Length: 223
Length: 247
Figure 1 (tube, rainbow over the protein chains, first blue to last red):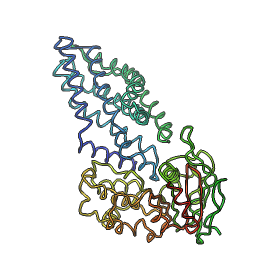
Figure 2 (spheres, chains in turn cyan, purple):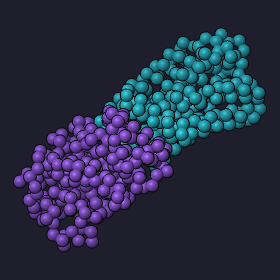
Figure 3 (tube, each protein chain N blue to C red):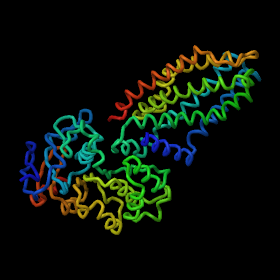
């Protein structure tokens, strides 16, 4: 955990200094909501459509971070420096997944208000805690799978393509569960309570992926 | 004589006596490594004792950097055996990593962090006390520029920081790939106690300048196309063979 903490602090420091990832994610999310606003010609979206727009937008914005997650390690020798050190290699997974999770939370600090402003989904105010609970679990899935996929993609020449090509299908179950869970919350007469079924699906998906990632990540760092 | 075992490939010249050394730090026996169809190292065998310096000579593409990366546990051997401190690689790599220091072509420093931040990061990876960071910065003469981002430093300064990174955790075996590249004579003198013969550490070094490498070597490995064409004491390396290595 100490090693993971060192890597995480380093990643956050680099991001704060360069602002290469999070502002791009903000911009992509806001532009996408603007495009939906004008493309659909509607001031308000509700139910499943609103949930789909929100979740897909966050997923696409997350892919920007996924593509950049290991760039500094690859281009500036961070992988070699890490592999030379006498540390548990799973620390890299924990650190990178935590960094991606933090980026996603910071993305949502801007994306959710922008979504509310541009697409005025009904019931969002009342269901906000439940929506955030779904997004928390979705972020965990995006972070773990995104880190895993990014570690695969970074070793290829077409890393910007490989990330989405592998990552989006793997994230589809999380996307479906999140959108289905949030959909009923974004209607006029919502109860504001989250669906236990979709929460359980998301939590289970998070758990399975975390275990798989921990088991396989070591092999990804081998030559 | 324990210093250099004279087990050679079929083309290798006979070995020559090297000074008596302590326990084996590096032991290679038939080390072979391929990249795709190409064999980069072919059946390289030698033994390097504690406190000795091995100079690896050969022109570009001879396999010098590949050998260093295998010794650094960053690449796997495809055949033969490699032992560091008696531990076989790659299986025992995790046991010896903390005892190795690598100074390669890449500085292994993050460009957007300062020198001090980079070293502090490495100190946490190696569980080294923060005071050691200041000591190595001082030793390489970078204390004054330690808070500048690495991207703003000259190549020579980056190389000095890289030396500081490589010795930060006080390794017992130094793997040095062109260690004095980008260093002016003054900087070269500055880092001498850390990575030079005066350090007293076991060293494996590559250089495109064979004369300087030979001057500080106890043992020479001459590579040509991945083959060990000579393993032995520097005095045994004939000048015409040396010239042919770089021809």
